[in-house]
Amino acid sequence: MDILKAIITIIYVIICIALVVVVLMQEGKSAGLTGSINGVADTYWGKNRGRSMEGALEKFTKFLALGFIVLSVVLNII
Image (cartoon, rainbow, N blue to C red; front, top):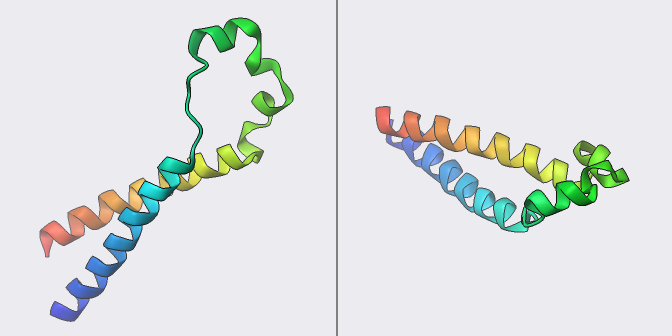
């Protein structure tokens, strides 16, 4: 059981570091209300956001956060 806990802890640390890196790589959302008034959402990048690098980073962040939560619960149970 100790070997399993060590392996899960190593994976947990890797996910934590990856989550921090992915969040820091994302662009800020500083446009806010001004960006929506100027029509930023109607640009090509606004419509195809899911296919861009920013969209991929957001999806990857969701998966890493889910892994972080699940491993946190598993480590707490063990």
